[in-house]
Length: 267
Image (cartoon, rainbow, N blue to C red; front, side):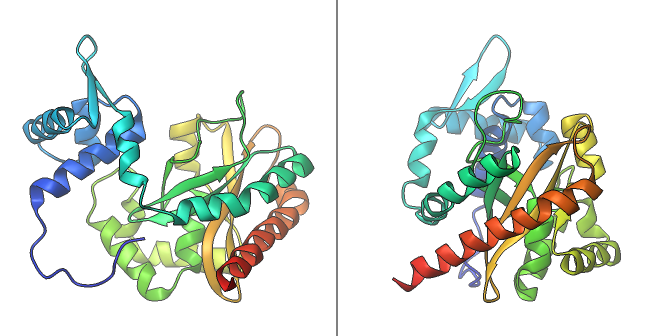
């Protein structure tokens, strides 16, 4: 989570740009100057300077033959002071494992982080159903089930801050932030249904329309802790089938995790 207090000075643009570049390299695993440009809108010469700086400081490595960049293990040092993800992951792990044994499909639990949902725990193993969604994966807010769910159930002031940020951030998946009426209708429907689904566009672009997901809030007594999803093969499970057979146990698992998180906070 980020602080909501107003900064006492103007942000350092160079630092902000370097962090944007590092984030994209982390998300893409093997990024190019062109792919970073598409995701950030930064000038390519600026991106090269940021990458060279990150390489000098040991956070990024470059494959000279293919001109692709990857993060190094040094980036792990940046997360050592952040404990919330470990707290949620530890409490959720047992429930997620039991839930997968019951339904046979993998699920994730995710926390909001600045402009995306970050997977902090998963019941995925290796194999064809892993979908490359291990802890640390950043999921777009406006097109994924866990992101849309968070926006629908978070507090109004936080929701508006997130939407404003997304509207000002270049990216393939932020268009809905520029369509407030359509976005509001979507979020209201999610609140009525108590779940959200991955957008068809995201499913088509990222998973060739083979995969979709359904997400629910992890809430207790009105407090939103996180969001949780189940990812499914479209050929195996339809939305109608998921609502009937998977949604109830998904909501029960999310409620159990939320109760455990609330109980943990009381001790």
